[in-house]
Image 1: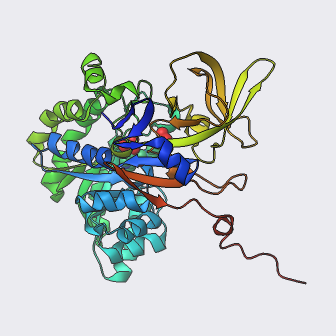
Image 2 (image 1 turned 180 degrees about the vertical axis):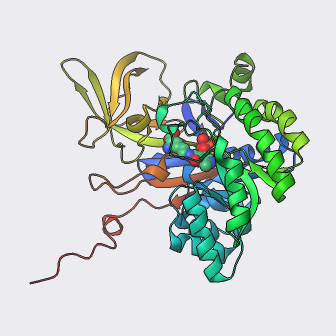
Image 3 (image 1 turned 180 degrees about the horizontal axis):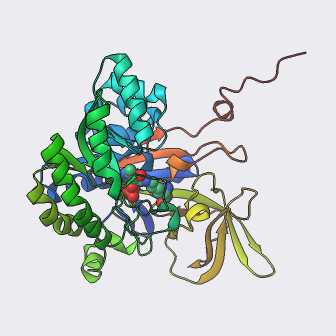
Length: 430
Ligand code: LLP
C-alpha cells in the first residue's frame, strides 16, 4: 500500500495535490510520502518482531538527508557502501553504531573513518579486504568487528544487473570457502573480531523462494560460526521487491487481496522467521527499495509531442540523468497524468531531452493521451531514482519534496547552474 491516488480528479500524495507542488517547485521533482517511508519501516519491525531483528536501511536506495533523518529519528540502522554514505548518515543524525558497511572496494581512508566512528560491523567481501582492515585496525590500536558476505550461489530470478548471489557475480565469498576464511581470521588476523555473517542475493525479488533456499544453505554455516567464534548476527541482506506494474492500483488494500502472489513484508517475514528463529542469532535485514521505492513519484512536464515515422513520442522534461532505471535495467515505471484522464489512450514512447537513444522513460506504452503542458507522475521512483541521478548534459539535479499529511516541504532545492559547476577550477592562465 502507498499514499498516491487520485482524489477529485487530481493525483495526490497523502492529502497534497501534486499539481500544487509542480506549480510551486517546478519539474522534474521527486515527491516522497513521509507516511509511506515510516510505515514501511514500522511494518518490517512489526513483522520481524518474533526475532531479535534490526532494520539497516540500504542508504544507496535514496541517500537524501531528510529521508535519512526520518529513518534515523525512528531509530533505524543503516547499511552503507562508502565513507560518503557513512558521512551522510552521521550528518543526518544517524548512529554509526547501527551501521553495517558493505561493498567490495573499501579504501584505507574509508576503513579508518569507519573505525574512528565505531560502526557496528564491516561486511567484507574478500580475504584481501579483511587483511586490509586488519592492518588499518592494527595501526589504530583497534579491533575491527567483521562479517564475511557469503555468496550462496542462488539465483534470485531478477534482472541480471541486480543479481548478486551467483558464482558469476563479484560479490561475496564462495559458500565453500567461508569456514576456512573465518579460521584464517581467527588464526592470522589479530585485529579483527568476527561479529556476524552476511548475505545478499539480489534486488527486486518478487518471490520468497530464493531467500529460503539461501537461508537453508547458509544456516548450518552460521550455526557453526556461532559455536566456534561466537558470532552474534546474521544479516540476510535486502532485496524485498516492490510493485512497479500495478503500482497505482496497489494503493488500495483490495488490490493486495486480489494479488496473493505478490510478496509483502508480512509474507516475507512469515516465510523466513521459522528458519531463522531457532538459530538464536540477531537478524539484520537491509531493505532499500522496499522502504522508499513506492513512497515517491517523480513529476515531469510534457514538453512536446512528436509524431515520428514509426512512433509517437511524448517528450518530457525529465531525462535519464534524473532517473536512469529504464535505460539501465529496462526498469518499468508507471506513468500517470496528474490531472486524471478519462478519455483516449495512445501507444507512445515517453522520452527525455538527453541526447541519447537510451533516454526513455517508457517505450511502446499504452498511456493516456497527454498533451504538452501537462504534468506527469512517474511512479515508484523513490528507490535508485534521485540517488542515481547525474548532471549529464549539464542538467542540474532535480528538486525533492517531502509530504506529511496535508503539508509539504522542499527537502532539496533544485540545483542552480552555479552549484552544478561548484568545485570546477578552470584552466590556469598561461
Ligand atoms: N544490501 C546489499 C549488500 C546490497 O548490495 C543492496 C543493494 C541492498 C542491501 C538493498 O537492496 P534492496 O532492498 O534495495 O533491493 N540500482 C538498482 C538496484 C541495485 C541494488 C544494489 N544493492 C535498481 O535500480 O534496480
